Each structure stands twice: as C-alpha cells, then as structure tokens.
Image 1: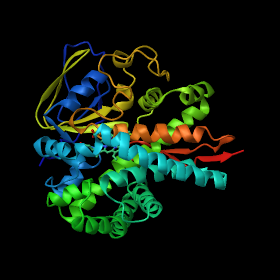
Image 2 (image 1 turned 90 degrees about the horizontal axis):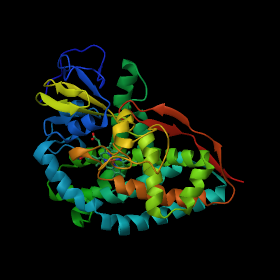
Image 3 (image 1 turned 135 degrees about the horizontal axis):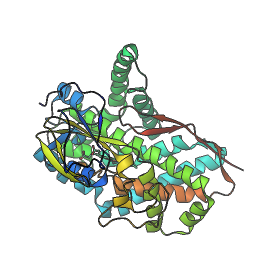
Image 4 (image 1 turned 60 degrees about the horizontal axis):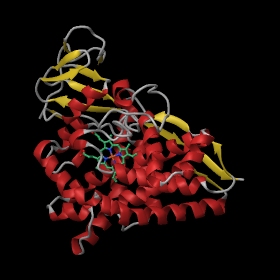
Length: 395
Ligand code: HEM
C-alpha cells in the first residue's frame, strides 16, 4: 500500500514556460500538470496508480483485491478491462444500447410532452440510469425509483463541509447504500445467480466476487456512468439552447457530425475536471519546457480543463467552441474529457450516443424552450460540475 506524501504547501502549479531544461518538482508533494502532452504521458505511464475519487481511502478500507475497476491498477486492472470490453463493443452499442436509448428517450419525451414541463436534469438522469443499469445488470427493480435512490445517494456523498457534516454523510451514506443494495443490487444478483446474462454483474458472479464487492462496483458504475452522462447531456443542451446557429447545425447533421459537436462541447466543459495519480517511483515526462521529474510518491493532479485548451493539441483559439477546429494528430475530439491511458472511459461511445439521440429528439419538439437555467455547483469527489433544476417547457 502506498503511504501518504510528506506534507506539502500549495499545489505546485507546473509552469511550462519555466526556462530550465529539467524541472524537479520540489518534494514528494503535489505536482500539477496542465499541458496536454505531459498529461497524456502521465496517464499512460505504467509507474502511476489511481489516486482520484478517494482511491486511497477506498484502498485503506477495502484493499485492492476485487476492488472496482476504477480503483485497480496494473495486471488485475488490465484483466478486468479485457473481460468487460465486450459490454462496450461498437456492435453492442450500435444494436442493444441504441435500441434502448431510442426507446427510453421516446418514453421520457412523451411524458414531457404530456406534462408540458420537466426538469431536464431529471430526464437526463433517468436516461443515463436506464443505459448504465442495462450494462451493469441492474434491471430487477423500478428504473425511476433507482434513479431517485442514486440521486439521493450521490447528492449526500460529500456535498457539505465540516466534520459534523462528514459524520452525517458517512451515516446517511451507509444507510442509503443499504437501501440501494436491498432494493436494486441484491435482486439483480439473485436473478443472475440462477440465470446469468450478458452484463457486468453476471461476469462478477462468475469470477467469484462477493455481494459486497459487486455492490461497490455497482456504485462505481453509478458514479462513473450515470452521474457523468447526466451532467453532460444538460451541458450540451444548454450550449445548443444558447446558440441558434449551433442548434440548427446539430439538427441538420448526421449522427457522426452531431458527435463532433458534442465532443467539442465536452472538451470545453469536462465533467471530470481533475484526474489524480500517485507516482509509484520517480518518473520523468517530456514537456515543452524540458524534462519534468516527478519524485516518487508525489500526487500528480492533471488539470483536464487546462489540457483540453492546450494550443499544441487543439490549435488556435482554444477557448472557442469550434467543431471544425484543426486538432493535432491522434487527439480525440473531446481531448482528455474521457481520460487517457489504461483507465480511459470505456463508456465514451455509449455516452455520446445517449446525448446525440436524446438531444436530437428533444430539440425537434415544436415550441420547446428553456424556462429556467440550472444552478451550477461543483461535486467535491468527482471535481465536476453539477447542473440542477434546469426546467424545460413547451409553448
Ligand atoms: C459524458 C459521460 C462520461 C464522462 C465525461 C466520463 C468520464 C470518465 C473519465 C474521465 C474516466 C477516467 C477516470 C480516470 O482516469 O481516473 C472514466 C472512467 C470510467 N467510466 Fe466514464 N465517463 C462517462 C460516461 C460513462 C458511461 C456511460 C459509462 C458506463 C456505463 C462509464 C463507465 C466508466 C468506467 C467503468 C470507468 C473506469 C474505467 C477504468 O478505471 O478502467 N463512463 N470515465
């Protein structure tokens, strides 16, 4: 197990304009990376371990054996990714999930049309829950009720500050986790012990994981797959509401071009804005300013928002929303918003399909308007934005 680093002062903000050819980040403290090339090198390095999303806290309590995929590293992680890759294969996305996304979008938008008003963040959560639940295998309970339970669960995990609030969060967090287990996870495990299906829970049962281990993987997918996609869909809708030209282009485009627009939105508004890694040994990364030496045991914070705006990667006017921008070779449309290296998001294509299909149908509704823009807050664990109470209406 890795120990905590020596106490550090303010995070060391890596400045690529520093003239020395070699930069040694002071002690085993915090190293901040804000350039695309260096970020990619660190995320692809075999000498770093996951340190984001409270990974080191999770390790202290649960260890890394049969830990959720997000918290594994090295060979066990690679094995787990290979074994679950079939649930994210392009053919599966284009058939099974596409059909589910279309059907669920239709259901949600029919409900919205009848009511004449809805909270966009509720609709996007329900869609994201339906799709991620199908991938994971959480299909033996009511989808809307599960969405409500997950919403309460994630809203309570760390939104408030102070030790009293922290104690409250732990107690209520455990209570809500138990509710999620009893209502959603346990029935799904029971059903799959007798009749396995093509999903993550069935795979974990076959691998001999305990119910508790399966529960933590389900919570991870809840955070990684459901809450991220929920926020992204609302953010993309806002950008399309704001700009008539972009909205018209989106509706006239084929699906591939719609995804180019969506990825550009995600580049400028990454749902997860900081990724963290712990250096297992001293590592050196090449940067525009020379070599940066990161001491062993340093915490490396990768500023995704900054890396996504690095001119070297995304060309001129990096702060502008421009789907036609000339990016560098081998730079993804969303740049680092789905991460990079071994932990790169396996659900990227699923999320983009959800957003494209749902928004295409939503924005074609005659008389659609944004009645109330959302309130924006930051989730302290994911370091991402949360958009709440966005009300859409017809007429
Ligand atoms: C717009 C939506 C999404 C965004 C912005 C997003 C972003 C990310 C990022 C940045 C990571 C890498 C974390 C790291 O390197 O530390 C990640 C990992 C992951 N994502 Fe996503 N994600 C999205 C949707 C999804 C969906 C739909 C699923 C599945 C249903 C999913 C499942 C996962 C899983 C399982 C991991 C962990 C992978 C690993 O550690 O090997 N994500 N996601």
